Image 1 (cartoon, one colour):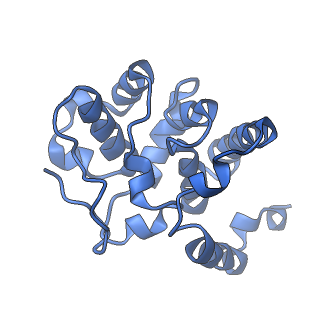
Image 2: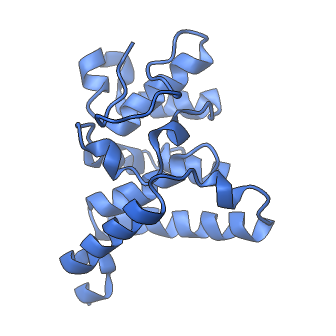
Length: 182
């Protein structure tokens, strides 16, 4: 049964990661999402829901599934998908993503989309507030916030909404793997 999951086969997992690097990582998903019919949004919502269940219940935080699930946190994705990633209905999803998606010099290369995609203003303040509470951002230092993509990006989104300076810049290409904190 375990062999039925592609993410459990290390050889196939490597091929999937190479595929995403070649075909997805350098392009924002908006090039194929813009102008798509309602059917695509419905399909993405179903895929996101199933992926979140597999991520939490079957993989227990597999990094490749975390990368795939976190791709649904992009502002261009349906709001229902973003809500799943930000833990609106199940804070455990966000908590596990937070543990599984560390910020390192190489981790930006592990995000499914370019970093700029995730930096665009996006969320309802209520969803962000709940995400910040789930992650304990009020109690975190700048160093702690910078340890994972979910905590770093929720702090960035909140800074954008509060009209203070965003924590990360969108326009600069990311060569070293991290955008600087201001």
